[in-house]
Length: 317
Length: 244
Image (cartoon, rainbow over all chains, first blue to last red; front, side, top):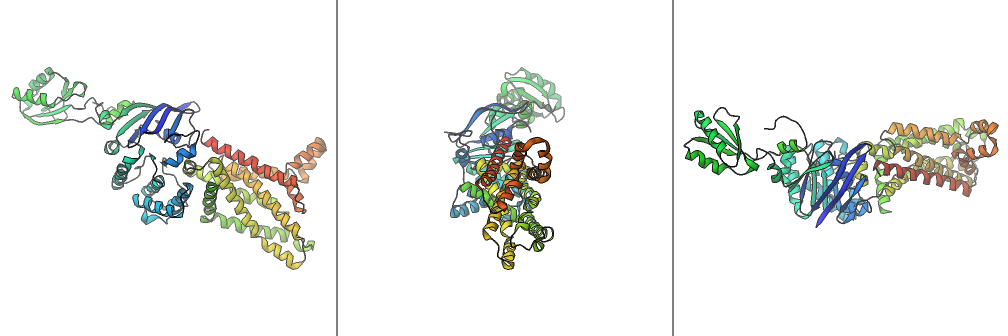
């Protein structure tokens, strides 16, 4: 069953169209990574899903509740970490979580349990009585995360949940998201691509307010022109010209180019990211060309990301 | 109702976790006392009433009410906490009402703390308690009126200083509209009807009516309408933040 449905979702701010007709459906059990450069419309989309911003056009429904028609019913099912993890600076995490728990209609006993659980999940126990203002960036983020997890919601919308955390904390939060992923629909926005590979079952790339790619992280990787390319280091660099001709003649090899590691290194780029390693190895062996190392390159998400979002970084091969 | 109470609790807590509440309360009590005894000539009047005390309330409120109201929405808009508030299962109306009521009750606390005035005048003479009680009710209603304006302005800006200054300016205009100075300026050329209309818009006119000890339905309706009007404007201002 689809927990989150977006139909033609559009948001205009004056002349600027921040989100331009997004259609998306997120079923239970999915961890959707929302990718895009800054200003692509990730946060604006999330704000519309959670009922903070009203769409200019289009519709959002969460767990069957139309967000425009009945925002409160939808919001009961959502846990939301807004961009930058805002909170009231003078409150302590205890007071902040208590307020959120009351707003969610939990009674005294349920509040205590929920707050203890959320604090435990996000490792906040040591700072529960300090004003949020005085906490480090990592703790502030985790206070926001605790607020989102408080009522064990069916839908989690997390805007950059690991921003500002150190590598260990990032790892912890990713583990937490992975653990919860079975029973919920989770949407996280991030610009850390390794995070998408690590925890997301689906990656959606948006640029200038529109979806430009939607698939598993592996699908996206395969869009790298160098996905499944084979890197070779020949034993003898004198064989380089011979090897180049041989490989060029093989079916499924689009082209052969120089590698980065001197005259003995070559890269064979396949047609349509097909697997060519085995055929390549056979051909080289048959021609009696010695190979020191042969490795298959995986597509790199950041290359795909740059291409899809129209960023001209210049490092594309 | 439950959500209004939740917002109310948080706002009330917010007043007392910062020094703001204590500063405002102290300044209000000191100023109210000083104005009553020095400028109001409490003793020289030699009357067992609190007129000298209530007379200054509109002018005290001009400074203190914007200070209470300025943070209501501006602070949340600046810190971004408004996004947390409005994505919890709380409607805009409940948030508007909860915040306003917290500020109003806070103003009520300030008024209750002036009870020593009442005790003093009771000790010194035999005042008409009905008139004093009506004065307090009138003052409380007037505070609500000023606060609703302040809450509305606060929802328009993320800058608390701007919220303070603009609220004070609007409240000043609404107050002096009923002062003899302004009314004389109008009555010279605008005719009696127009002058009466301007006077009827003023907080001062309605508060002075109540201060005399008569809680007229018209004055009650006036203050309640001001509150309703500006709380509705407040609601619209918050919806505008949401882009609706």
